[in-house]
Length: 246
Image (tube, rainbow, N blue to C red):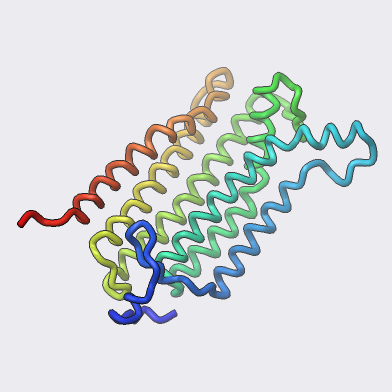
């Protein structure tokens, strides 16, 4: 895709959250990524097949909470990639490799993703919600947290790299001050997400089973850290957009 933007072309673009939407037209790469994310969702299928009795139906429906959480996680990654594509419309060799790597990680990551949320639902419900896998010893759960945390960090790391690439070609894209700040926001927020995943994985790796099982609760810090970082950037954008005193 061409990186040559004129004032006339930029002026015709819609603006969302202070960023002109340079990627309004879907590309073949974006179509492929969308299809890959959709395929990842199909791997989360509830149960092992079509229920053949009422009891099997009830058992399958008990898997809905874990499925919903897993679906939301995949949808969040898809939405982040879609937002990036719509904002910048950048499709060069570097971003293509990063996007394809992100798809590859997602297709591998979907299995530990489902296992983590299934185990969490099983634990919080006191065993009422089923777990579709067995753990031979307590350290197996720690291993799942490690794999999940590393996959989470890898996915958010790819998103951070996509935003970093945008900054590298900001001049070609003719990003203004607000758009550059929004791009830095994308980098920082994804670094926070990735660091949280790494901390969780390291916690599960370093702690004994009695303490390591709390590795999943490291993600509970995100409702605090993410809004704090977002608020700082929101204030910075407001200062840039504020009219100058006469």
